[in-house]
Image 1 (cartoon, rainbow over the protein chains, first blue to last red):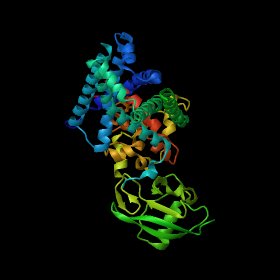
Image 2 (tube, chains in turn yellow, purple, brown; image 1 turned 180 degrees about the vertical axis):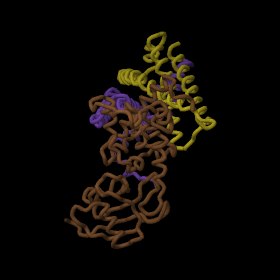
Image 3 (spheres, rainbow over the protein chains, first blue to last red; image 1 turned 90 degrees about the vertical axis):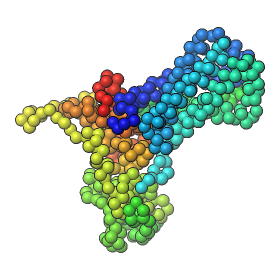
Image 4 (cartoon, rainbow over the protein chains, first blue to last red; image 1 turned 120 degrees about the vertical axis):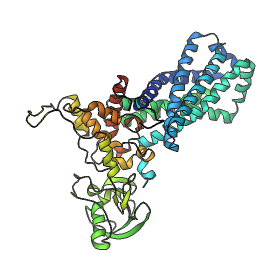
Length: 117
Length: 115
Length: 242
């Protein structure tokens, strides 16, 4: 492997993580869609949303898994898009994608904290 | 020499276009979604102000599009997992129809609730 | 028959070139290869194209017909006509040598890179290996074995167009048949050769290869098999860090 490229086993690991996170997300998104369709029936209000999430450890655990899975899934997907659309490869791309994952996880946990507290 | 749209004009390729476009758009929306929920750090009133803003018709249309993107990415993703991890031969086109059906059903349900 | 003359646009030149129009008599049961042959023999002997067997075995006559890669010897004009027009170009995703002839070198080099040749442990003095046609491995190998190497899948694949290193559907399909060959001894290094961003894991299941394969094979299914096998090998630490 040339300098600056992920090893083949790391590339396969990324693919595996993408599929594993997809399987987790499939469950999360079904719950999310149902919650959403249920929640919008009388319009959205902060009281209703926070009433559901504040201090609720079940929702907290659910959304923690959700945020983690999406922070893995989205960056790896974007990596393929960037490779194929801009023929961008190598270490710069992989660090960028890693940073996107960190930012997503940070923003996600910040949001989760905001509705749990 | 590159091929043109005629080479790509088949259902599984459209499914790919939907999956890629929805994936990119959802990735762009995700930080906005998290930032919006993060408003609750500054109190319920702040979140309520934001939620009132989302009651505009145009924003509601945008939300419906997001529901569609999410449902389409979910259904298309389940189809891909099935194609990659299960033995298959003949039923892959039915999967495509099922994925389209799930997407449509989710959007209809959402619209019924919003209206 | 409705038309008695075909208007045929044929690619002339190399990567840069133009479409040249010919008028070819419309015949019953006429194949696209018949049309191209008529042009070369009766209208313009400088037209270059490639064919050998004319019966769908050799895989040398594939061209892009009305926008889709096809084997021209087994494609009837009546199947592909849009109005009265027929457009014939060289295969996509391969360098054009001249007119309808592409350089297949990258295509076959990738078969070699994917370790597409059988590696056995026996000699001619050993007895024949007995492989039951009923075993799952043999069935999987059978499903992909009829490839004639025509390059239609390679020419139809967008991942090939996007990523010059991608091995492509035919080479990966070949590797999958060998991974399922119980006599083969090269499984581990073959999985390492076909894994990752330039191999099976780059496939997005567009299924253009499966859609266009003239032998009705499903390289997509073979590639999916490789994805799983290479994933298991990677999880066991068998791919090595090359």
